[in-house]
Image (cartoon, rainbow, N blue to C red; front, side, top):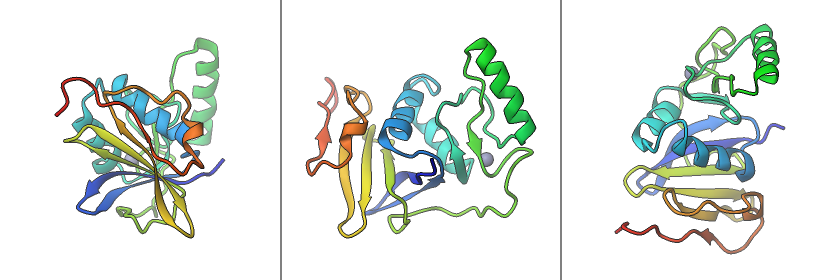
Length: 179
Ligand SMILES: [Zn+2]
């Protein structure tokens, strides 16, 4: 399902980030960001944000993909082959799918940053210095609502989907040793 989102860094009081097209719900994209920070990027938040925000300018999807592979947009034929291989092996074989690289890229896609003014339902704002991720949902009348404020080294939310539609912000406990 096409549910748009933004993956961003804080930029003063604003955000500076990139577009993510498919399934940007917390239980999909939020959980993916949490997982790749630990697994694919081995807690190297700097490298993670360089790849997600500096090196690529628009994402089709990063859900269910593998950042050990070079992000790119495959052709439909390649997608089919990778899918069959993945089904057969059970390994994560899909490269993160961007719009800007690879044989299936969209040449008209613009290298633009998105800000708070982006008209998308979900935003994930990752702070490299504080090691936090803030999850926002755009309530069209009320603007951005903070669903969750998470220490990346804290405990994972048990139910990512349940973060949505709450009037209170979920906060995980500050991990030991964090100032
Ligand atoms: Zn790219």
